[in-house]
Length: 325
Image (cartoon, rainbow, N blue to C red; front, side, top):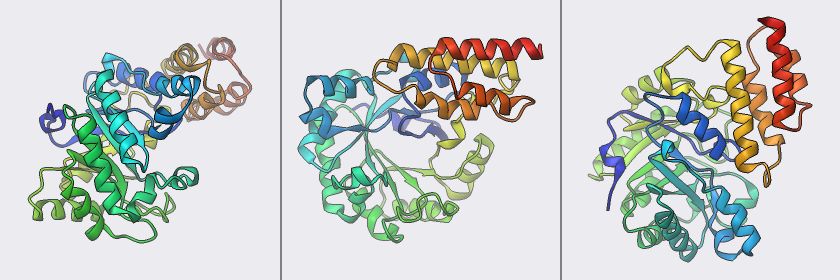
């Protein structure tokens, strides 16, 4: 098995999988503008393993679009959710055949529709099944490293029971969102528990890498948290909104003109790669983040929120830039 995780310099910094955010279009923009360093690892948005196994041909093809990736995004990990080991085995095999560098199992998503399937954060309540899913993924993709993204617990913090159960299945890496499912994002992330996770891993003499996740605003803070907790890596999520250059250490993209040109490039890529199957409204979450913190940003945001195509976005940005240049 080729395990790219083992070759990453520590501490490393990875991009979180975010539903309806880190799609193929946004990841390409991030890969381009986060050079020369870039995220050490990127993940796809989570994809339904049950859907890939059971949906009709049209449904499968839509889901397959979530597994689009470019060479610039490597190493790239396919993230799936399911509570059915047989389905996990099949989609892991699919990921291997598509050329992904790894497979990740979502064991932390609090979405109720996913929890109804026994998947996502609900797996924290069924550790034996969680182990089965990791083993099934290994069977399906024997040449790829299998990782997990999860939380401290469901209704309460059960890290001391939950993490050892996962470690026994020997995943290559575990990304730990330092909150319980019940806490969602309503409280500060408990980074002291990431430190405890590292201690548990070491006590068990496990080779699994521990990646801390929660509330990280930039790479400087990520470095600090890695040093304090001893985590092998740190995952950044919401901080990427409006800043695809987040991993580059570069301030050259912060000026208004460049930022808006990147916004337009992102919008055109979204329309090109996903416009026929995904709502243009997805881009409007990004508009709010790109158009912020400069004179006229509020007025620009209002205009951008009324657009319905990349062409309209281009017209709005063109008028705005003419007014300030």
